[in-house]
Length: 110
Length: 117
Image 1: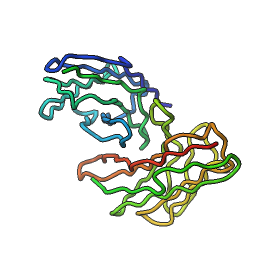
Image 2: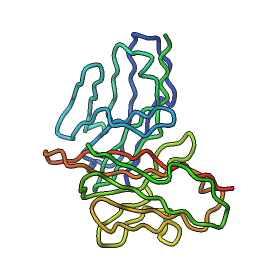
Image 3: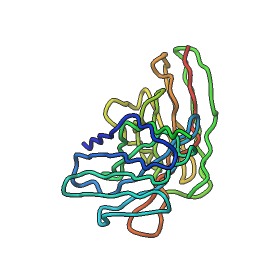
């Protein structure tokens, strides 16, 4: 089955800096790659996603890139703000099922 | 997106008992899922709740322990049976929402925090 690896497990940046989180997946048949943000005690929230036929997608300060050949995708957050502090999860979908990475705790220091 | 509610939001249960968690969506959805999130961990798929047929369970999860019902396209239940402290976790309902293009987005309910003593 699908296996998703996510790095780093923790990331600390200064406010205004950029943050990058990387994920790799194992199953080349996976075709959809969402990213979720989970604040403490809250549900995971979908923040951006990318389909397998697209290489890059941007939404204001966040962007996702996908390299199908290498089977990896990344989340980029620019101009980070303290409210970006949360746990971020990547996921890959294969045969209708989302498999999640281990999560990255992002801390943005003011 | 979709408005998803879960009941109860939290519970403390005795070992050996069972708890049924309800998930309600404000619109008909084709796919519903149940996930478990242990403290400080990622989300693990328990099963896909199929309307009108048995749920499809992932490796490591069995129907006798986690029976699931899905009587219609807006409602599902997950029962955690014969609980032990190892079942203490957050249980999340998730639904797939068709976005109109050849795929769909997946959203999560608020979760049920279960503590087994």
